[in-house]
Image (cartoon, rainbow, N blue to C red):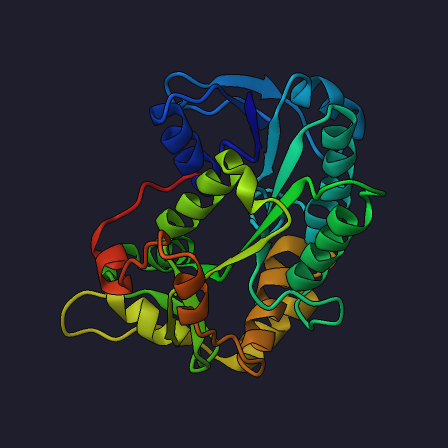
Length: 292
């Protein structure tokens, strides 16, 4: 049994469909049942923020996949709650059940990174690698750059009737964007291939500024609009007490404008030739369903 925690999200659903299609038994774990479940996968309700719910959710698993993140402004949660503390609880529960673990992380992860998500993923990686006292590694880490589909959906959500998306700040600094479909290939492979235990697989795509990515979701003859940097700063600062998730996104946007988010994906693809590399133009042209 392969258990996918965060299996109701965008990445989790794609990984679930791939594994079910390959004949694997798959259990999806999330806070609530998906409105459109993947046929052939079972569902168990649990919340990584409540560790007591996890032992039953992972019981009987041979592999547990952590496909979750705490950056969705709609969910009212934080990377500290989900990506650090939630993963620590999940890792402990998975090891107690004797399951191997596949952890979704981020390219550029670091304990002193200025972006909170990167710091919390670093803490999760540390818990995964340091928590095994002896024996062969029971883990695989899949690091991915920014999901292009998520950003494209966010841009399209700001377009309204005009069809012109809005970018927070200047949006000039290059960011490496990757198709979530490519990441799903790596996660699904890591779940079924024991030879990948103890390895870190990095999956990247293309370097493109947020403004250039938004332009791929913009109608002909139009250019993306921009929220001035001062307004973004105000959102990130003044809304922190009442809308912490939205304020976090605004602050991260400002950091991304000054911190390098470029990445050379070639070495990773050279090491794992089975990794696909979907062009961003192709990703933008295929409108991905809006998943929670």
